[in-house]
Length: 317
Image 1 (spheres, rainbow, N blue to C red):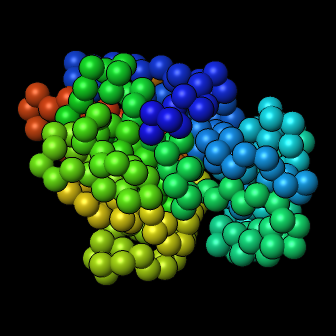
Image 2 (image 1 turned 90 degrees about the vertical axis):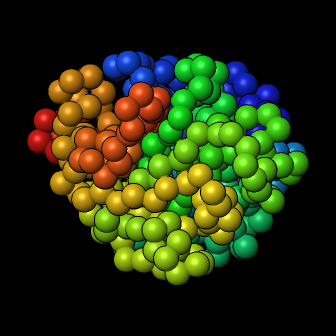
């Protein structure tokens, strides 16, 4: 994780932390380049690869990961080809075009786009930058957790949204601290038993319960994808790396209804003037709706992780 932080230093923003009330912080990853945390993993994956193939980089995405890969590719001077499903919002498709990516919109959901991207990568030899299930991507996302702990001085609990799980898995390792994450960190994904670290509350929409379903089944399983956050949290199955990490101790899985996500998004705008997309508001929805209730005196951080949304819908959901 520290190596990832050094690798991407100067390429990503150290996003601010806002203490909105005593013991409650927002980590504002929605203010990151391209409007989400995803650039952290994109840069780390690309830079870890060494010399890139002539075909450049390729990715499948619901939108945010594609924007991140396109941005990183532009900054590093390489070609980016991005596959997105039909559910991807027009705001995100337009953003991809503005970043100079070659865009293919195909399939109903993320998994369809991922299949098409994998086929294309095999044909061209381009470097695949997975949205969530690569160790380098997970490590890059985990730098958010390192920052959070430094900025707050430590918290008891971190609420984070889950789609494919790479972000939550990275944060789980990133907040663990020196000596807590076992050697290898990402790859083994192990955390020293009994070590003191914050609780992770992994928040998912009820209509896309990839982690929750996997925990009940004891393995990653496919789920149906739908609801207001489908374009950002719409993975059909939790990543293998993420499941290995998030099925360990100190992680709690909670589900939130679409109505709670909409309310959280409206509240972030009305009270704090934070323009979050639905997936970016999911973690806060757990707190507002009571899906997770902190104990008295519990220090809590909520990661507000995405802002790629149509501003006209902020007041209406």
